Length: 256
Image (cartoon, rainbow, N blue to C red; front, top):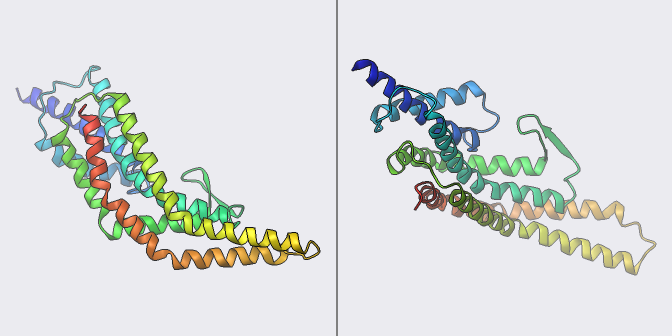
């Protein structure tokens, strides 16, 4: 009897860890720059109390748990993506700003993500993550993930098409939000470039390249400086909508 109980709890622990691991891997918290050992410890710390309180009902670990484990892993990935999509709006602002003012060529290779990031894009992304941590968004998300074990029981097989549809809708919504927040810099850069083009058209002999890019850089950086407050308010609005987005993912995972 005791052996069966212990084996059942081991099966429950495997499923709980699969959901938490999916969330930790895709979520921007703790992040790609954190060591894997730290992520493993975080998963174990969160999984231990959940395993003790979760409804089990599973027998000894067998191959029958493999599809359930994959389903739990997918559920954690979906909730982690909801958090990542929310912060990706700031990543889009940084990318658009770097491209608009001509700093996209001066990029740095990030070995953690295996991608090239500009200095402005990295700065705005770190600002967004710091802002999210400062207002406690990570605590809200972790609490939602732990609450998901009550809302979505272990072993629930989610419809893949419905989950994918909800994530696509979230990605489109966050992309639109990032595009709106990047409009001041992109719009001003377009105006400056059009003005320089008209001056160059009127006076072809002028060497505008020597002053055009510095002017574009200075106006773009000044616009970024002046729009920090608007960016913070936009991020606050996006992070405020995060609980509702996670609940939307819950509905898709529960098949509702």
